[in-house]
Image (cartoon, rainbow, N blue to C red; front, side, top):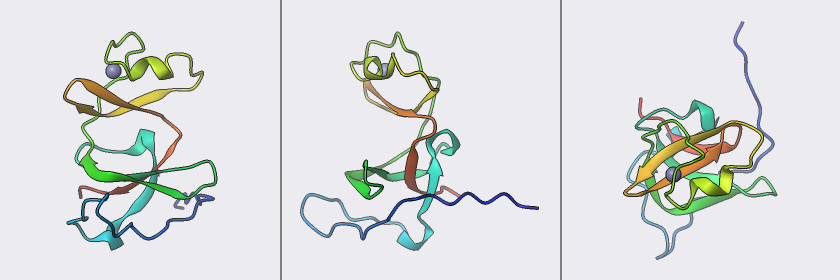
Length: 112
Ligand SMILES: [Zn+2]
């Protein structure tokens, strides 16, 4: 038996404007996953807002996760230091980390 999880979110069309870089991958491959399930190389497209709608980033970026360190001094990790649940870091962006709550939903295009 295969476990399938349904997410209460709405994926909107990717914005077609000058603020958003074009997606160079096949958008039909996009999937919703928990942040803890993002793998290195997955292309991160969007988070979801409080209403469950896609909140696309201006540019996509590949995941290159590493362990969350609440004492990290990057200036971003500190905002998650008081979270009760687990936190994962999905990317290291040249000096500042990309921490997410492990259970947060992420729109990605899997690397494979
Ligand atoms: Zn950090």
